[in-house]
Length: 173
Image (cartoon, rainbow, N blue to C red):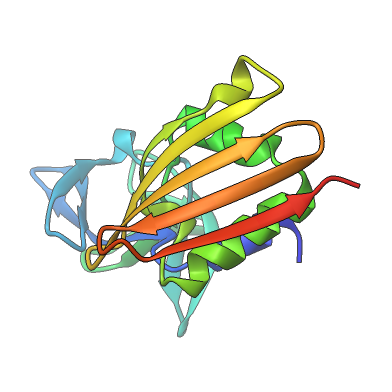
């Protein structure tokens, strides 16, 4: 599995909602019933049609381009990938494959998604050795991640608010 596929299959990777036309303009209501203007949505979205999610491109005028131009209707269901913060996205992209997949495995083992990240301090942007700090919330637990890195290894220390801790090490080849 490649990195993009593994990210798209994560729990809580998507923002789900429905569309409604109000006062001549299209509005997206997410699962928390918060309203969003179409201009705030990413261009690439998925439309739930015929029992499956179909990838398409959203236009502000109430159309989505899937295999053909589709006119949105009130109540149509859409989803899109949750955006990641810049520092966190950069951190994920800087991890070597073996460390990336090891990190995802550790997080998933504790019922966290990579999309549960609240905060990321990416020291790898500035140095070749050091520690990155990340904080995750899956609405049941909080997890602090310290990622120690140098040219030989990537070590992840995950600590829950209960004090439960796990350490995973990936050696560079």
